[in-house]
Length: 98
Image 1 (spheres, helix red, strand yellow):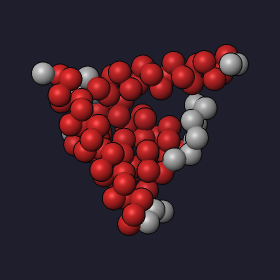
Image 2: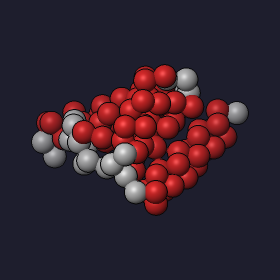
Image 3: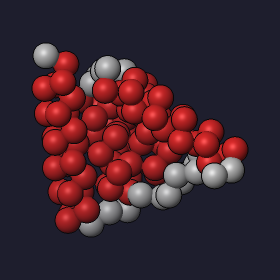
Image 4: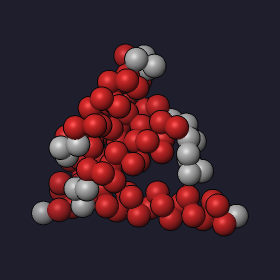
């Protein structure tokens, strides 16, 4: 694994950990990573929408706009899949927090 791949993995893991702790900026960052395919991540609209949705639920106002913009590029089925993934992640994160 190259250093840029290791760096991308570290960034993803650290932002994921922060998001699990309720950091809406970390969730927004994850949405940005997956919506643009930056930092070594694959472009994944479903994953991006999921993270924007999580950030919005956590109180990040900017995430709502990014989520809406991204939804214009997605099918209803993709949006539904992203929403299910966000609910599952939030439910799991809340369970681990208690």
